[in-house]
Image 1 (spheres, rainbow, N blue to C red):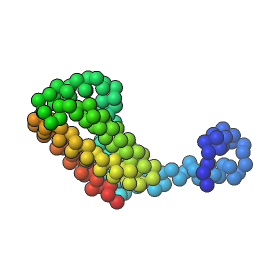
Image 2 (image 1 turned 135 degrees about the vertical axis):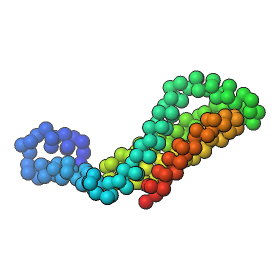
Image 3 (image 1 turned 180 degrees about the vertical axis):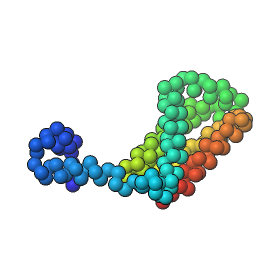
Length: 173
């Protein structure tokens, strides 16, 4: 059964409650990380290989997406200049920036939720979805870089894309 926040708060602050209440709180408190592999077990390295690349992707996309939201004008100006010599995309800078911002924020949020799920429950499902969307987002970035003939920037995306592929492979469950 579900334990509400007020029930938990009451159980923590009132130590003199009944034995049943204390037992329920003990179970809730001790079951949190029972599934997590011990650091000296062979499973720990596999679990860590799931968590680390997804955490990397979460940090990358949460930061990048928030930067685009916070400095929308600066990013729009920079991209407008970057795509000014690309006739096919010149008029699409604003919708491309909006799409990319949304992709980055959702990919980052899914990866962050995936890390939390891996730590809290061991489930790789959200982490894998976040890694998949991260791969798609890197392809969108690569497309833009290549269309703008920013070959150095496009080449720099390769290692990030490989991390997303590794994360997909390691969390595919």
